[in-house]
Length: 241
Image (spheres, rainbow, N blue to C red):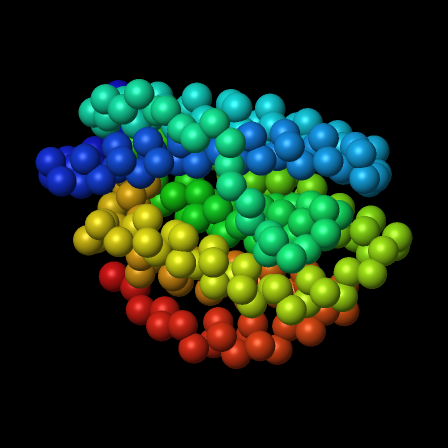
């Protein structure tokens, strides 16, 4: 039996389908990136635990990419889900290869996975539509493990090589993640969390919470200076619908 929820408007249904299409596509790109990082970590060195988490992350992404496609089609998407063959670089071009690898792991797993996990955690809590709620739960679990991958590799790297340079990139990573999400949500006029549809205002509130309670404390626990990031996050408007 389907839950008793207010039906989506035509526009909301299109927006929801579009969000899941984009998730399927970005998940494919993330899988390619994680697979490439796994190979790089094998070459340049990390712990066996991190490599195991890399393999798990790749398998998890494959799983929820398929789930995202299924949800998108449920709400009317007809996209072919085609994606770029190879993701572009995330790290500054001036970095050496080992620094680029660490930068990408930290951004994808310590920062972005935490934000994505918080969003899908909120969706899982409040969504009433069964297929979306199940998908959110699958993605939330995957993002938790991706986060563990990021912090495990950063912790291992600290023991072997200088990593203080990461400190100067924390704020830019947060800004990039914030801008990426708010741009993607710019066409959503109002949250419908009963169906898992999130607007930019709801995202902003969740983003600020996870940055303040998870991401920045994580960096601070490793003795990185986070004051500029704290100041920036403090000044983001947190108004929600």
